[in-house]
Image (cartoon, rainbow, N blue to C red; front, side):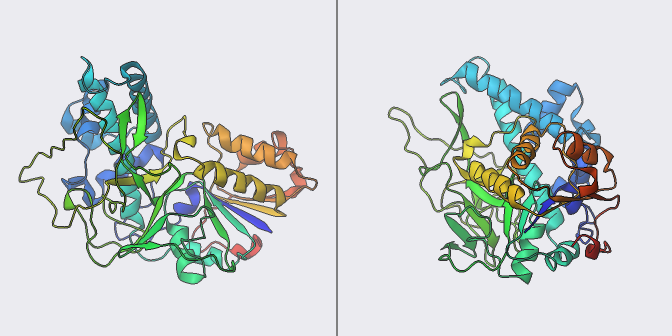
Length: 406
């Protein structure tokens, strides 16, 4: 069996986006955002990000147009401030003397998750990715595709060219799937496709909104934390927050707001009441769709230094265990556009554990224009012999010769 591991470089190969933009990396994320139409859409929320930018970067609001900070650094900083405020405030998050700062951290953190997902959705909202379609021709049902990317370029290519499906194809099973309405997952059938193991979640995975409660962030949903939902397609407007459905998106992509979930929220504690307030202006009109159901949000592990996988129950422990199992068994491991970020300690440990269990040494193939440090890591940290490593110092794109990998 082969394991194909996809990193940011694989997503950068997508050059057919109607936006004219390519998938961003951490240090050009905001520049990419400002080049998209959503940058001028009043339903795309950036107000608390701008406030944070002004307060902690000592910049004027208009300077945000030129803001180009590494999103991983910014998101990590906001998350750390939020966690500190949650711990110190406990049950008084919104009614202590520092409630305004607490709200700032919470709202900025949430806006960054939605914005990050929205930028990816905008860029991938185009034709099916040809480089990914080319790659699929070489992949067998018993192979495994492991990705650190949040986009759905591979998901859509698999869906349109193989028997792969969202009911079973992610290895973890969603509760329901949105196909122009919420539908149940399919019954398990004979597997005729590779699994797509998404170790950081996906822009089309959905969970309930997060709220500060009991000194931490908690989900609104009444069900288990590892219950999650998949967005696949829509023809008609779906029910979403404030009716803010946005048309014009292809399968596996949606506008800024995902569909509401077919769930009930948690019961309101005794002695408390739920209030919702939306400020109306000419720039913030109510949407024309319904707003039934539980307000949702993207289920991704955001690009922060200290990633929290256990928050979502067993979803990610199951996925990472499967990835380790497949890397342990693979005869050939092909890395396309993955560069082993220094901050991703968990990935390093994943390979160390997998290789320590092996009785044979796999073939390692690296496709990356900057491969020297990756090769050194496999030799000196993972114990792979140099003769077992093949290097292609090239970008992965539609013209890449895949014959030499397989």
